[in-house]
Image (cartoon, rainbow, N blue to C red; front, side, top):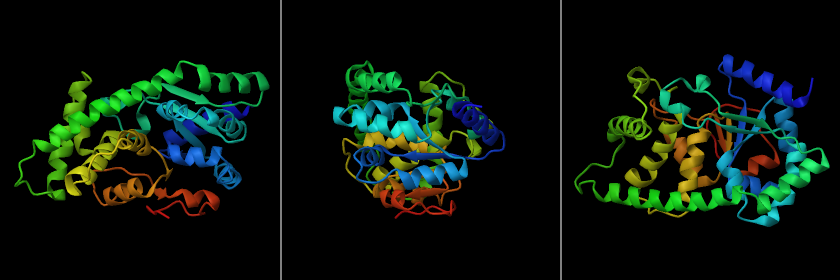
Length: 280
């Protein structure tokens, strides 16, 4: 049985048993590994021992094309690490529990053959995926305009507390379903295992901009996209601020979060425990 087929079967079994088996690295973590600033070997050994896989979101691949010098080092990483490109498209809006949300793209990356390896590098440097990165920039600008307008519309005397969260979260889920022309699954609104990406990504917005009144930064849009995917992962490796957001949201019964949230240093010596929400 090929490595690709074995990985697919194991992941399907895990989904049926509601077992999360993905390690999600943010783009900075991928960059550090590709530049060899952090060795990939501890992570490689750790995921293989547990039958896990490393999940790369489709938009991350586009984001990494920003530095063409990373193309070959990234391809070298994908020769040895068990990496899967996963994308659920808009299927979360139907309100199924996270383990039932249909996956539109499931591609186990294997670059062991030189022709495929070279073609992958060529696509990162010159392929149409680079246009997706320009679209990310445009989307981020539009999102910033919307967010700052929405925040400015909040009355000055509004209490900036977590008491507002359940009501605003439900409104967010309803509005996003409507925006995607999908009827709201009313039963799913009260189930934290449904709409998990919407819940976590909105929670990050709520904590940063409603509770903490943080100003918008250009990289924040990518964090928002990351959070929507991170909700499906077992382990997340990310920078301190986003990790802190997730740690705060782990206290909320309305939100489904990764079991382990860690900083980049975790990659140097992955922990044996996969419980709790930690950041180091």
